Amino acid sequence: MNEVFAKEINLLDNQSKEVLEKVLSYVEKKYNAVAIKTAKELLLNSKN
Image (tube, rainbow, N blue to C red):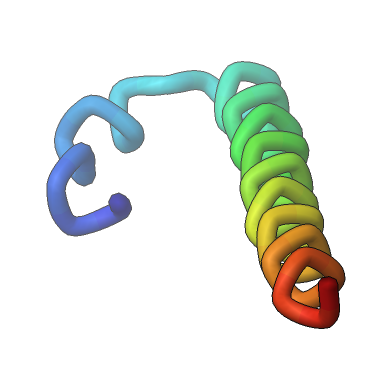
């Protein structure tokens, strides 16, 4: 992401960069949780 939005990110102040980092961390955790939940459901359904 830093490569794609490098110019825009460099224009942000430090506080905005911190908020962006928090948002990205949150999204990353949620995305991983969805993937794990889906895998768990597939595994449980395949046993039936």
